[in-house]
Length: 276
Image 1 (cartoon, rainbow, N blue to C red):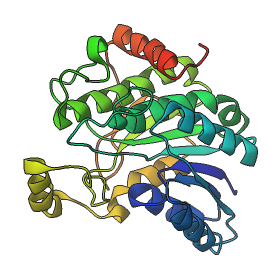
Image 2 (cartoon, one colour):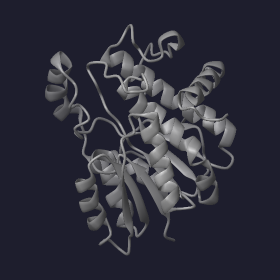
Image 3 (spheres, rainbow, N blue to C red):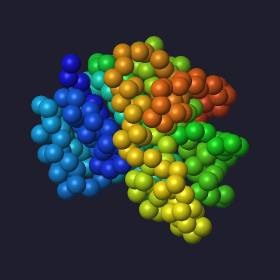
Image 4 (spheres, one colour):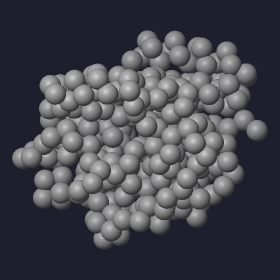
């Protein structure tokens, strides 16, 4: 049965690979990216696959305004969402501040996902309403620093990665607690994939990516195996992390500090200027 699938970060890397795989199954695809010309070309290609109708939305999700504009654009195209796959991501060696005062990777990697899940709640409820977040494992020692959530005083690439990924897992846990019986949400590890996400990585870490990336990386085809499997299943499991790449799915229940997860939820509502 044809489904309406919304994908963020759909013009490259994991998001594009998922869009192609699900278009081949005959689903209708709505996908987001920054490059309008590239998006239009991909939409035309996807629309030739197995009766698929693909529609593209150009949107910059590094700002609160951009995220809200994307949600509005999605609402204009569909009144229901069966599967929502969030695949946006960026890595920055240097702290890049958005006009909202956020650091860019926090806005793109976490706040965007939090806000869209909140803003598109009605559309998710009208459809099958399954959320899949492309993420990764938690880093040892990662923490949410509410005193400096935007890392204005102590920014580093690895601390940023740690806080962002922890925030994603906490969001999945808290969203599942609030909506999991209606809208399942899960985080899937896609592993290390050469997608261009490291384009803003500099110095020693750039060298690490160049040397070790090809050795430990995997193809996009392998990276999306569990994403596609989760999209296809009728199971309603919610609040899980799937850590294994291209292997039979292993579920790990996300079980983090509930007080911190709840506080992060409230802070994220404030950042996004959303009504609770």
